[in-house]
Image 1 (cartoon, one colour):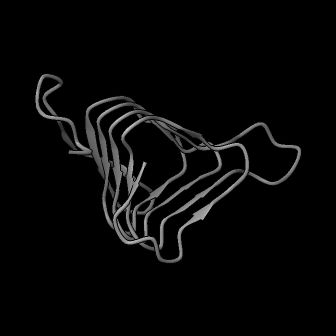
Image 2 (tube, one colour; image 1 turned 90 degrees about the horizontal axis):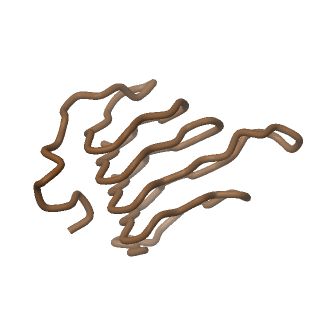
Image 3 (tube, helix red, strand yellow; image 1 turned 90 degrees about the vertical axis):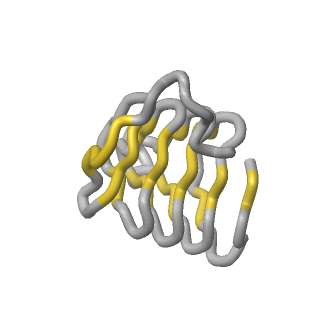
Length: 102
């Protein structure tokens, strides 16, 4: 994991974090309230830009870019760029291209 600007990053309980992830400032990765089965998951090579949130059942696959201030509250697959509130796919990445986290 790489913290580019490790200011005000919140990482909640039960997070599953892949390899080579990059988190920017004011990122929140938080599970659902106690007793719920939902928890965030980031795959390998994920970049989470400033202010983004991955909450509750928010999960992303490998080689994903989460745009600034996006709110990911459901599952997404591999090789996508996410943006918006709630997050949606705004671009698909070539699976053979350089990883998002580099």
